Image 1 (cartoon, rainbow, N blue to C red):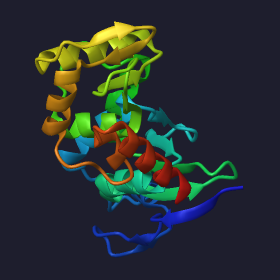
Image 2: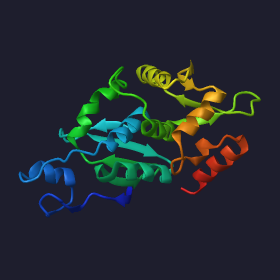
Image 3: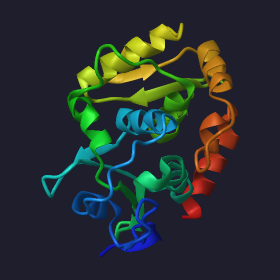
Image 4: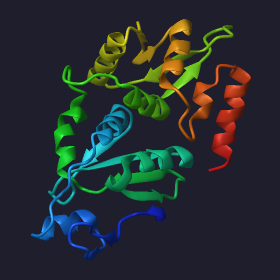
Length: 225
């Protein structure tokens, strides 16, 4: 059984000043109101989620909604904040996973094709997309006896892996690929993390280049959920 950690479902409609329990249902049923267009900034966070573990569904045959989950509360709360009014909130299930679902909105219909893999053209790896993607699915590894880490992602879907490799190359990186994984060289990893900027909440350990500190901070994140 799930419990709400953040419940953003109810409110007052800014278009008609009426209270609602479900914003998307209110817009769909009220002839005086329409679905507002999300701000351009939301495009990057949506794409970042879909590059990682995000998915779309429309169980009621209406506009689709975005879902994404994490074991890191601070991380999923950061995504909730980035999605703004599109987020319905966060629940926590019996396994301890935090699950975010957006409201149903026609904007997500543009991304149905991403469920079969990101398109081969029409988008680039902006810094906000990369920050979300790395915070969700990326990480550091220290191969062999190396004292320097490399950024890596495990991407089991062939089409998604090919698309991610392409957009990394467009940013002048030369990703390595093996066993359904992508990785950057030691030097490129440091450049990549510098390009991303400040760590996102709940994912700071992924920006830590010292192995002992990385593991300490990673374990600390897991212990405070």
